Length: 325
Image (tube, rainbow, N blue to C red):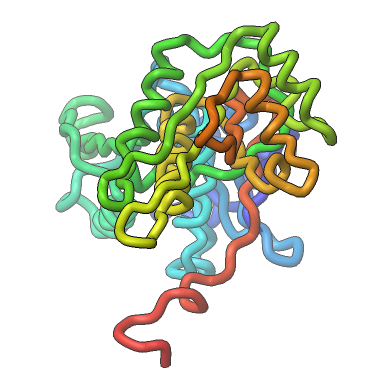
């Protein structure tokens, strides 16, 4: 299990336990002690199995847009079990949700030490790319290789997007960001290009208050903005209507854009289209014309609480090659 560790003394204890067992990589005592001391003040994750510490990772900010993988260690007996990858994924998701654009790591250039060659291949397998070598950063015997990864790409954004139902910070969402989100939705495919999806961006506090008054039980009460999704249920081809597919694709695009821009949201559809027809009350407030239905609302804002990932079934249970069996 990957745990985020908050207590400074526990961080130091875990770092010491792991790093003192990895002296092939952390042989210089002074440097090792510095890593242990610094870890107390950094975002810190540990892999724990029935109370036993398997490994840890911590990050540090190196710029407004960049986090660095400051130090990571996995117990020798736990190598090649996927623990380092899970630790990194937790840290990467954290950095992306915090709005950082890049994550970097410094290591020794490949071809100098066999142990570091293995480490570097691991970094590359995670998706890191070679940026540059600084031959004098440490010393002549340890040329520093910098690897970097962009956190702003579709695959990473998909991986870190989760439904957020918590409280939002009371920070206005810039209009240009809301327009970017709406454009992402309208760029989605639609059946026979009928473009049956429209959106209404709501960022006026008075209108937001009127909308919230129509939603019972209440949801997203603290969101500083909201995107209301409309559909036009017309046939795209003969007697086939693809409106549901159209707006679903648009909503997913907007959810990804929301996260990419550093905000959070949740797809609220059933809550407002149920038998009590909250959607019709929303439509009345927003003067939605006949022929178009409100099908979804997307709150938009910065999360005040931690974004938690739900449990997922194993990949192997859900993906098959060439046939089911």
